[in-house]
Image 1 (cartoon, one colour):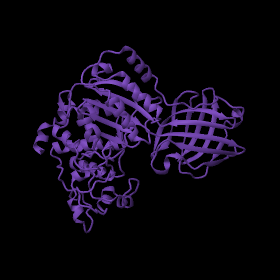
Image 2 (cartoon, one colour):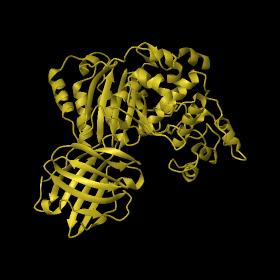
Image 3 (cartoon, one colour):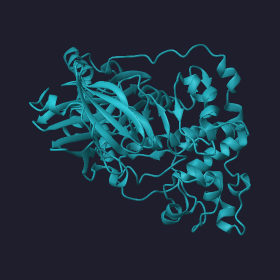
Image 4 (cartoon, one colour):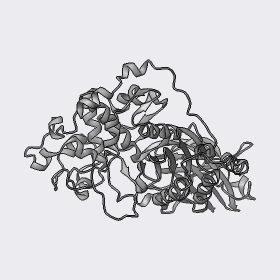
Length: 499
């Protein structure tokens, strides 16, 4: 297989000299065998169920047949992929294998100079393929106790020090540190970070630009999460896999790798109606209906439908990832027919009107309050809290209301649109400053409520500011998050700071 992969790869130097990447062709849905009404039904159902979809792009027979972004999200905005990043790390491994920099049977332990004093037989047996199939043999509690992406220890060393309870290849457990190790192995073998290694070999040929990917304190691309790209970039990536590694006449990935990476390499369960029990490949999930996907926390999807010759790219901020997939199967997949459908001008106009007006609900309420002038400009200081909010000031001006926040030692201003979304400012979320679009209104004489969307991420905050004497009662509610971050946060009370 290794020689076949090597023969199938076009080297980066050849790809780099290719002509500029043309835009994806656009088409009416019916011309590609998909009813506009099916797409409209998906969109309306996602909104009715409040599933928090941020963007949608549907490709059929290589044509974009539907695309839309829910304001304040936009087509040119990159979006956090979370674990959908894993599929890109897998792709880097596939290219490195094709270039004979790595093999899937390379020893994980032998790749790094951090061997424990007495390595176990299971650790010594762990191979690169075990990292890719999430079959390293670890137990969750051992990894949670001994490995932290936020720690100061060398992450490769910390990983190799973990107990390996099972023989590698025999026990599936979803293991993001394993993907980090795959990224580290690519970097060790090629001398380049995964994000840089993929630039000329994947991103540039696909027309993907402006990508960013977080890295560890040791300068290794995180691999398992941290990649930000646009919705169309996700769709292009899926189309590359649908085309078995070919793009505009260039072979970017060997067909053998695409087939192996997206096949069922290990069992993940046996429940027939669960999209997480259909098996796992090399950092790709198998799905029901013979499909496969890369996916990430809170609803980031690259769904590939080989039999239907289709790709669906979705970004979201949802607590119900399975609910979104069910709507894809019920409406988009079910609506795909083997031949072109008769033109349906009325349905196409209805879909176009819907897609052009997509938006997250703005904050309802009044533009002003009898107390607005009195409260404007007051600064309230807060005790230490999990959100890192130190001071809050409500400012009023001719351009509308602005929240001035000091958070984690950084002061910023967030302008709030009235019955509209307004971009500007940042808040700290997921360990980094995130750009914000906000909408705010007075929801009572003494209460200002603002909705903040971090539009390069899945996250949304609703901030309730209730003024009472010299106190400001601040309620924070978050749409999605890990652990206690989702839902209503503990209320905090700030005290008026003297001028």
